[in-house]
Length: 79
Image (tube, rainbow, N blue to C red; front, side, top):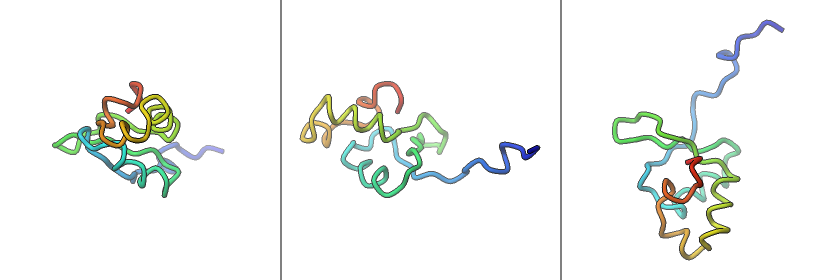
């Protein structure tokens, strides 16, 4: 119909910092189908981590290395 996108858009997302590790993001991705919003120190959106991006990073870097890496560095440009 004529419903506006703003009426159905999600406004709350799980959040992470650009310095959080992939290991820290795993529970956020696992318990929710929504992407994780990456917020800077001023709470501004700097990117999103999607489940496929996180899985690609873990696959490329391995679970041991992925757990110790920054999410921002390893998500393939898709935070």
